[in-house]
Amino acid sequence: ASTTMGDEVRGDIAKARHRELTSLIKDKNLLFRKNHNRNLDILLENGKNGVYQGYDQYFNRAEVRSSDDLSGNWVSFENAIVQGSKNVAIFQ
Picture 1 (cartoon, one colour):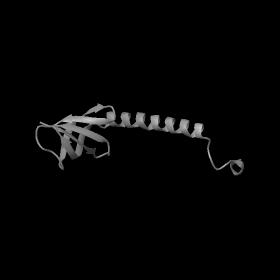
Picture 2 (cartoon, one colour; picture 1 turned 180 degrees about the vertical axis):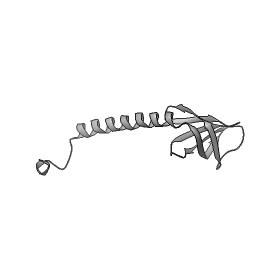
Picture 3 (cartoon, helix red, strand yellow; picture 1 turned 90 degrees about the horizontal axis):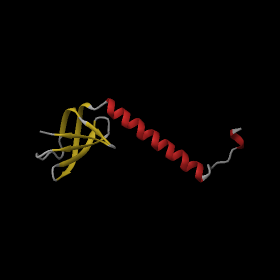
Picture 4 (cartoon, rainbow, N blue to C red; picture 1 turned 30 degrees about the horizontal axis):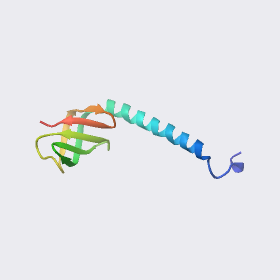
């Protein structure tokens, strides 16, 4: 059966599959982050106006708010807030 199939998938089918996979990945990532939001080590790559962006040890996006300059530093958090497509924490 596979030998008689064409090489390409119709555009509408490919788009539907892409949307379905993207949605599934997003849902699974959110569930993973909800189950792994404790004891996070976050590498903060850059920041502006007290809001720093980086990635945790699971390569999930993270945002940290702090009055200290944390750019280029690793910070550890016992608990982070899962928010949308990233984890959020406040460094005190």
